[in-house]
Length: 130
Image 1 (spheres, rainbow, N blue to C red):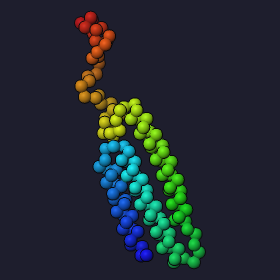
Image 2 (cartoon, rainbow, N blue to C red):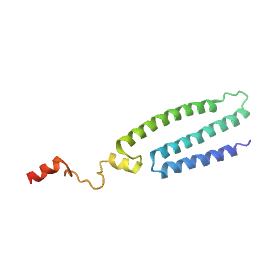
Image 3 (cartoon, one colour):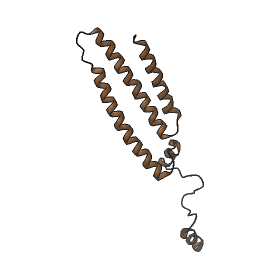
Image 4 (cartoon, rainbow, N blue to C red):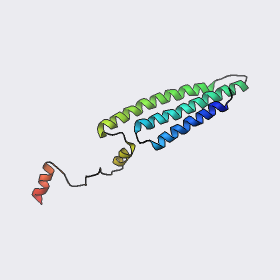
């Protein structure tokens, strides 16, 4: 097989993953897109390893060894990433990246003003002092 076929497929996979990272708002879909990009890199590593091993007399298969390390890192990344996304979803009730970014930057949710309590004993105390 010629080197161009896996290289083109890898480029298409990487571009699809890049589009998913840039366009998606759901954190789980972003993690899936990152995994797609890592798989494109793995395909490139194996394809170039096979192509270079035909030219060299000694076959070290370093591309395949790097692919195994990349798979191990990707498995750890997806495990930790999913744990973080699930913890954030349980605390905030959403996995939308834009909403999480707004709360991290200190913006208040819509309908809430800073410094004025809306319900409960704080509202009664505010009326009593006024």
